[in-house]
Image (cartoon, rainbow, N blue to C red):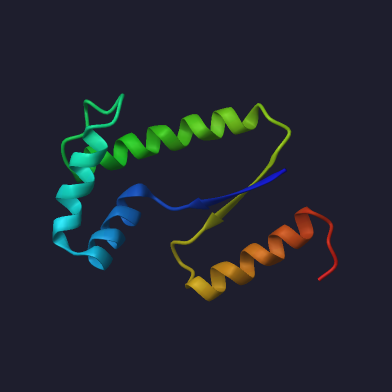
Length: 99
C-alpha cells in the first residue's frame, strides 16, 4: 500500500483556508478543533497549527511501523497542476509502473 501525504506547514495551510473560506472560518475551525478530544490546548490559530504538527508527527511515527510506502508531497511552492504532475511521476517510479 502507498500513502500520499501532502506535506505543508499547518500554519500555511490554515491561512490559505482562511483566505479561501473567509475570516469567519478561522473561528469556526478553532472552535470545532478545540471541541475534539485531546485538544484542550487549542485556543487560537498558532495553537491549532501546533496541535496539527503534533498529530502529523504521530501519524508519521505510526506509518513508519507499517510496510506502507509514504510519499510526501510538498505543496508549498507548487500549483495544483504541478503538484498533480509531480505526484503522478513519483508514484510511477515508486510503484515501478510504466508511464
